[in-house]
Length: 169
Image 1 (cartoon, rainbow, N blue to C red):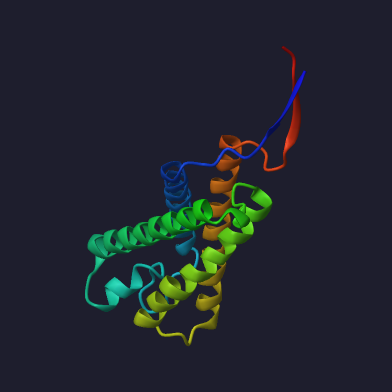
Image 2 (cartoon, rainbow, N blue to C red):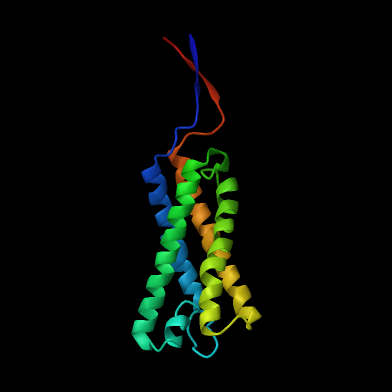
């Protein structure tokens, strides 16, 4: 009788990035839809469309540019999350209990590097309700990114705890 231990099968880097892109895409689509709940003052459009309206675009071109920017930022943040998650074993992002909090952190980073500049470039930071709502939308994005990544990744890797396994000859 032989006793072996199963350990974590590492998630390939390419698989990890694909999961991050999937989570980033879904998160940015949901965040984009939430943007319609709180239109930017003066423009009556989501916060990610308002900067394009501020520079003179109107109608469909402004909305298309806003959506493209929103999705591209979501994909970049998703890929960055996945790259870090696959490279830092202590992060354990393949566990939902760890992946979702890390995703929330990515949401805060997204709010700082994307949400706040989008608001300030169009309507200014003098709208605390809009600033707060975009933070909430960013947290929803991050939670979705972390949940999607960790849920699928946890199914792709075995448990991180070693389990003794008895094999008969």
